[in-house]
Amino acid sequence: MRDATSAPPVSYYDYIVIGGGTAGCPLAATLSHNASVLLLERGGSPYGNRNITDLEAFGAALSDLSPSSPSQRFISEDGVINARARVLGGGSCLNAGFYTRAAPEYVRNVGWDGKLVNESYAWVERLVAFQPKMRQWQTAVRDGLLEIGIVPDNGFTYDHIPGTKVGGSIFDESGQRHTAADLLEYANPRGIAVLLHAYVHRILFKRRGTVRPVARGVVFRDSAGAKHRAYLRRGPRNEVIVSAGALGSPQLLMLSGLGPKAHLQAHNISLVLDQPMVGQGMSDNPMNAVFIPSPKPVEVSLIQVVGITQFGSFIEAASGENFGGSVSSKDYGMFSPKIGQLATVPPKQRTPEALAKAIEDMKSLDSSAFQGGFILEKITGPLSTGHMELRSRNPKDNPSVTFNYFQDPDDLRKCVEGILTIERVIDSKAFAAFKYDSMTFESLLNLTLSAPVNLRPRHQNTTTSVEQFCRDSVMTIWHYHGGCQVGMVVDREYRVLGVDALRVIDGSTFNHSPGTNPQATVMMLGRYMGVKILSERLASEAA
Ligand SMILES: Cc1cc2nc3c(=O)[nH]c(=O)nc-3n(C[C@H](O)[C@H](O)[C@H](O)COP(=O)(O)OP(=O)(O)OC[C@H]3O[C@@H](n4cnc5c(N)ncnc54)[C@H](O)[C@@H]3O)c2cc1C
Image 1 (cartoon, rainbow, N blue to C red):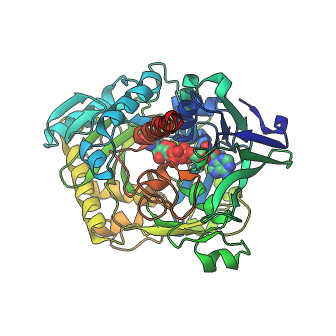
Image 2: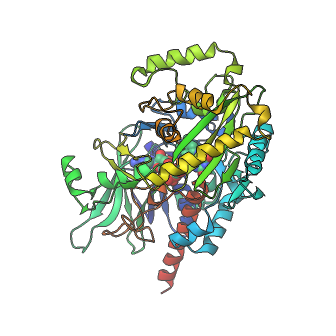
Image 3: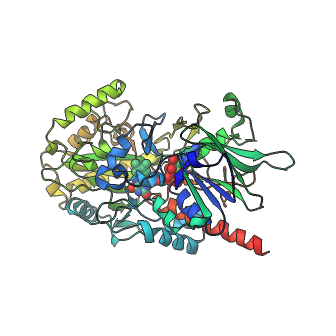
């Protein structure tokens, strides 16, 4: 990999992959074995950055709001603070590491080839998936889930099976993260060029003399602002493939002239194709959590265990001094005030200065004040959907996104059942050592709510109505997806409808989030589609 400043002004490849993320890396690595591939990533390298590699620094990358941060914060119109990746390896460099496959039923419904899916998961797992070391707090959550009937005990497995299991992790035994960027080890070095800090501004189309617009290249800028063009070499199978993630992919299609006509015209973008579904079907699985202060010290852990219930809610947990943040920096991890969760400042007064002061104040507290963990629930689907719109023509600006959490009553029902299940886990015998007897469930809900975990208004009945608790304390588990969905924007082979030589392959194509957590399936999809595209290419060359 090298910096885009060293790239020539014009270059030619068989495949141009936009976005070196969770799907883009395995895809480019696979394609490089029989074609020339350019992989363009707007962010830098994950290697040598301890905020990415170390488990204990989970919150630090999310808290870094500098322009060179691997994480770019966005706040949805729903008032929930969220993050998107900006680094080679994409979301797998920021995430909580939990690795788990999609259910066979999901694979069947999407219409994927089951055998190739299993081979592609195994290809990913050989390099980046590990069995986590279970310690006392995670074990207590697992035993609590089993005690209250989330059975059977499925032990350690990557498979999605109802009951309770220990899943995989992309953190190895020593707490070091392995990301999708590691999958580039599989690449053919002679077939691939990986450019960092290469910001794609536009996909170029040929329109004259063709029935439909045909993608022919991209315009990208390096960190010095210099413009470069990369074009597809001549050949019927050559393609531009967008893997820029659930915000980046629909945003880039719109910036390139594919999207709702009136919206593009309002931004003075010349229309290539009126495609009203680009940016539609955006969903984020709501996450709601309950904080449980612990009378005794607990390990630092990210997600290791999941209870897969019959009612469509997944129960997971994370723990540790400072809730998974780094102890030395007193960065409060997943619930850091810096990442907008567990802030002590009321939403409207949450200026950077006020947050800095809140963090300072927290530093003076004894670390036992933060001893404990949280049990969370995430719902399947979800059924509620929203949409995305451009705010500007600058690809660096976040688009405006609305997820409409709990708009569908069924999503709310699943959340309520999930929270009531968490209550039973906390009350289980297995978990007894990790909670204060004097604290009622209502007081735990109150504690959670007293932390402005989002920018949404609070209501009086929030601790007496679980529905209201779900709505008021909703957070993200960062599994947002959609915007370029199969059947709406791309066909079942991920080809963009209405144009040629262009595909989208990443989480933006999902109608529902796969498995309990999506990254395994996103990486699998990159490999799976790489194999399919190459075999079509080889078949056409042989014909
Ligand atoms: C904090 C956090 C915790 C999570 N926890 C888990 C977990 O524990 N387990 C799990 O399974 N999943 C988890 N997820 C979700 C999972 O990581 C994502 O679903 C997945 O990484 C999305 O992959 P993607 O390929 O669709 O997008 P990404 O991985 O985001 O890749 C998109 C890439 O495109 C690049 N890009 C965007 N626009 C441009 C442009 N214009 N030019 C060039 N490059 C561009 C981006 O920089 C990025 O690298 C988590 C996510 C986050 C953020």
